[in-house]
Image (tube, rainbow, N blue to C red; front, side, top):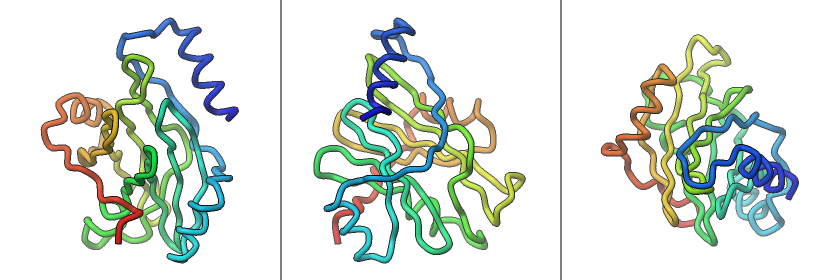
Length: 170
């Protein structure tokens, strides 16, 4: 709840009622995703924590013994970046969410995109920025980039974005 209040206050102070803009959120220690969600992930030997509640979206950090990624919850649907982070790149060792800030792209007081860093093998030198776009009901993976400018452009263009797999579907 505190994260939602902080987000709302930041929106009011910034005067960003309809303009597109970026806010930077720290990757916090995420916890308290709720018993039903925590149980669902635990059944898959995964840990989960609620990082932020932004608009109608929940941003969840998910981890296994050797990997971590973000999932996005809208209503009863969970969209997962696990496939993109953990499985899509060959010869990648131990991809994990990086400490630091993630970009949250806001339009009309709602999140429309995220840019977050994933490190490989624990080294920021071996990292990429992951781009996720949101609409009112769906999360999309738009790709990976090495620079913030390219990641922002990829998000803005949106032409290569594909719907993220649903974490709560078998």
